[in-house]
Image 1 (cartoon, helix red, strand yellow):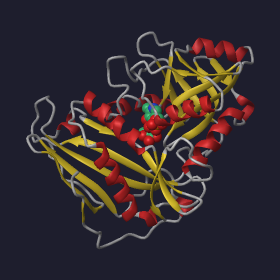
Image 2 (cartoon, rainbow, N blue to C red; image 1 turned 90 degrees about the vertical axis):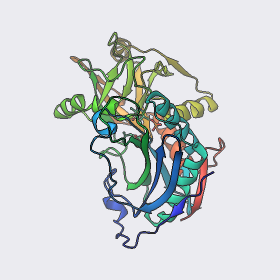
Image 3 (spheres, rainbow, N blue to C red; image 1 turned 120 degrees about the vertical axis):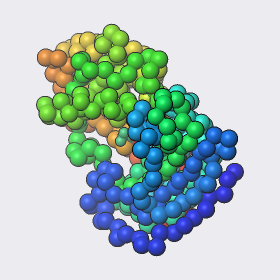
Image 4 (cartoon, helix red, strand yellow; image 1 turned 30 degrees about the horizontal axis):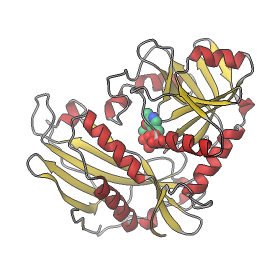
Length: 357
Ligand code: PLP
Ligand code: COI
């Protein structure tokens, strides 16, 4: 494995208080950088002071969107230990995204090492307040000095880290979600299952319009028939219908979320089966009319486990849970955050210790 060199920041910044973090607005003193050059592979793994990078203005990440990214977190545990949650899964997924975007694969072990080393160097930045964490954003961008449309020969792999609070300003209060039936995010065979910038660019207009109507995010329908539920802007979705937990199957156009996978594994370990299948918006509307749409929630690294209190689909408004978080949603939230913050034993061996805080 490559050595990671370290250049300390000579001008460390003052840390903000945990009460004022928001999501993804503040960055620490250091970042990890590594370069790729065809013929040489990934090289020059280094931790350097956080700051601007130099990119060719012709780079295909700027013009054609050859980019991938990941999202993970470090948690300050109740025992003062800083932990990561399933970082190996993030880098496995990064490599699947790389494969789809014709970006060369990274060494997953080196990436986990890089995250651990970076977090340890900036460990004073890991926030300690309830519900806060250090958000970790690894990403890769193409950097060729060439305007032709082709997979690049040069890339940057960078990891930046950001002390963060809740993703939604409302915290654990149920969110209102707009079921989008005009725009689509992804189609099977496209890039929907990869974590790549273009998917998010394609989602922005729908999000702006949903915000204008008072909704926090969009719930996407499938791009072909526009009737099957896919996922929310930054979360996978689950529903409890008539006592059964259901979630859209991974059909190739939605992100295979790590919180989704962990939620399914937890529920199954509790003897609560989860059906992964196709779910129509119509089915949810009918369940809502029959009083059987008991819970809805989203799962994601940034959003954790977020209750959904309202779905709007065309003229239909589905109110869920009477403004309160459901029992299964609460149990999952407590278990997931319990493991992440070291409050309960990590029976699944999901967490990776970084250091003492
Ligand atoms: N779906 C989308 C589109 C996302 O951006 C995210 C966030 O990462 C998720 C789902 C949830 O994935 P994970 O649980 O791995 O964070
Ligand atoms: C995450 O949950 O890590 C995400 O990437 C969501 C988002 C901020 C795009």
